[in-house]
Length: 578
Image (cartoon, rainbow, N blue to C red; front, side, top):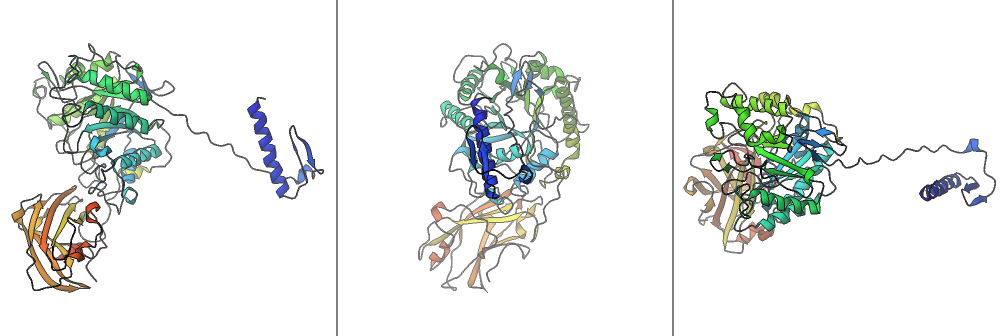
């Protein structure tokens, strides 16, 4: 018996001694210490102590590569069959859809639909501690996200994935929320900042085997080249610099390197052209962590020449072989098809392309993450229907023909019924209409009152703006004076916004600003009307009730009795005064 076991034996004996003394027993022997006290009672009177071995935490299961295969920590081949859940790269700084649902239920649905991986797009802007969402989250459904910034929301998603046995690929999709960049840096954001952000994430999630890898930059395009040797534009060299820096902080991650858009006259999909990777491979200091990634789309995104070839769709495998598939078929390195998707899986051109591509992935054992879970991808649609609950059953059947089980044991049980949940029933009025608001300026006596409003349509119906009416209730000191309404800003034509003041007693409020619209529509799936409105009031200080304006986020408080929304005269959101 080694010294550690001897110590454990003494500790166990001391513990039993304490148990016996608590039962009024009078003696105990500890190995190596002799007899203590008086003669013990007969052993038949000793109480039984139920013991249970502590459950050992599972050993981390980080992934590596072997030839063209991805393998787990035991060397077993694994295949990633996942889905993209986008949104963190946009101004919501959070995955989309949680304006209509609970984020945890959406993750349950991903598991129930048979996926084992989430590719999570984000922007570098979302990593800023000040990047706190002001829209795009219904905190009634998701109270645990309120007040969190983008990085903390990422923590939550990763924690939720871990509980469900899902793996996560972090996808640096954009630098800023407004849109993608063709290079991995721009004139305001350097390559070093890009690397530093990746190193920060690598350190943050070090030891957490839920996060399996870094998709370094989404869809290199334009001047992004491969194998030219130019440090400013050679994406292959930049990927090496970033990948090696990440591995110095966290050697467990897969480094996922997308292709470029073109080589010489060979134009392909952005991020999809890996035709030079055989000649100019990415060289990492930890070589068995490299995964190449391609993006491939159908005619719904762009009508490429090969879709019109008379040999279509039989010509497609050769095109995929030339641009990215050869890496897997020749055993050079694993390939992850990081994005592909389209609205149709039927007998039209797009449907034939999607079905042929799934067959190709199956035949060659290639991993994928489908674009997308979200329905609000304008050119591809998603697996979810526009109501954010229902499922496109044809897509589900196609993807379900090539899926692999979870790579980790889940901590929570997910019901198969989570695959097709019923939409929530809204307690008041049509589904999905909400209002967020805040004061836009500090308000003093006699000054202008400036308020910002956002009317969100988080449901699946589209509304005619002529039917909407927004009311902002207040107590007028001088009801007979003109309040001089004006529009400072709107994301629709300002002349279409009409403001008038109505004198009506409700509780302690005497008037309301009535805002209506001349024409237009409010689309579904998170569309919003944004307005900054101004009017005069003798005692403007009463409009300071929301708090400190300079740090005030938008509020969506349906119980506050100052803001209501109506459709054709029927109140559908908010609480009236009194």
